[in-house]
Image (cartoon, rainbow, N blue to C red):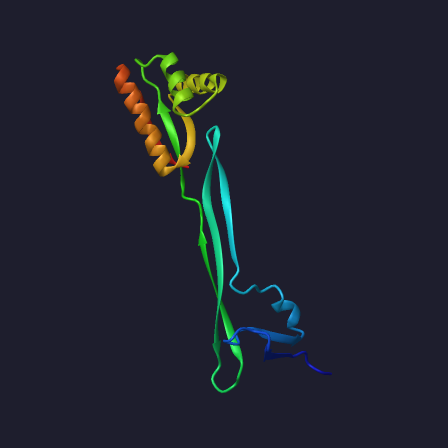
Length: 167
């Protein structure tokens, strides 16, 4: 019975550094999926409240080759770098006894871009339960929306409060 074996040799059509290998035998199929210096760039789309936010999602794969001393065999090592979406935070609006329901609906429509029906549902949830979720966003966007709500409330004289919570 003969054992399976693979033979590696430098490919004459490779670049000047001789970094490509040709495989023969049983390893050819396993090496066919390995891409040299492959790079994939995508956009990760996450639903943010009533809209969509895009975040860069990149995966880079690079192959670095080195030759084993005295054997003439070149070993390739693969490393990957990955960028993912930032963590998301929930924006919560709190009930109080002074802010009017109409003002809360107006804020939900202008700051969080909710429809009239959705804004009314969220406002009633806040009124009955004491707190309600306005949307889920990355930290910087959520922080900006909370600041806009507080600014609008202070300009009109209402003590409306919003807070952040990790989703």
